[in-house]
Length: 87
Image (cartoon, rainbow, N blue to C red; front, top):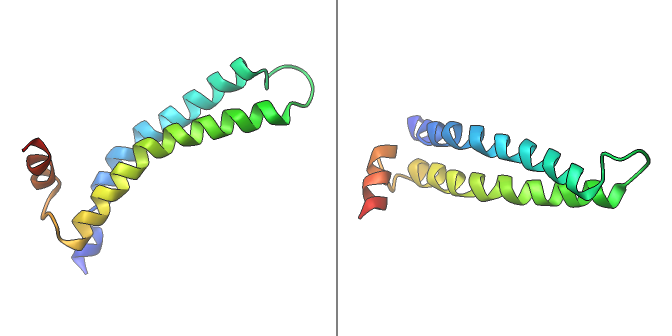
């Protein structure tokens, strides 16, 4: 039962920068692609969304992988994972 909760802290560490990057990239891309201009610009908004999701997932996918490995018992704690990563 407790193994289910082993990786929660790794996701908590990954969520904050991933969501910060998502919203920052989304707003920047909307202004660069012209989605903030008056009128309807669905392709510009879609492009901004695609770019921001790619940045978000590049942060969250490794964090989710760490969570899954902790839950499966490959590593007992997050610090053990970072020791393995350093070797």
